[in-house]
Image (cartoon, rainbow, N blue to C red; front, side, top):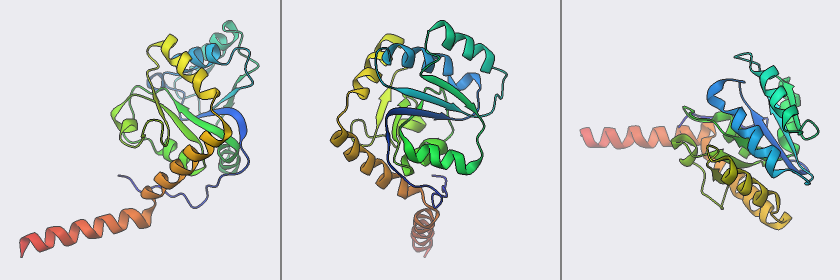
Length: 199
């Protein structure tokens, strides 16, 4: 695993049913599927989705039109690329980190979200399934089935505060495995093991 510097991240008072996506606005992130599922799930609910990241493939206008057509402009906001400290504070106060990506080499943003106390709600791809223990430290959602994804998101929005706090603690604890000092320990143990085999 890639070491992730988590020292600057923290968790603070969470705003209920707030979700954040952090990443480039590119086709592989499947923000089209994400906004569709979220718009449906959040109808008549107090919920908000923040989309953070640079407009890498000029998709923002198209996505904003889609959000408008879904009548979800009041609960899906595009924030563009944020200064680092603003992003840190947003993650700290957000309930869930969400991504519908079709592929990710690792998923550093999701780990940073977990370190900030965000419960991960992620697509069913190998890199995400590798660190999400369903129902324990996060959720895996099939965003390609919009109806099913919407139903799952609606269920997630109904979690009690106690259920969320338990999962939040598990997410923070899991994220610590990716701190540089932990990765260094693993590398040293591996080198030692290889060295002993050669002797």
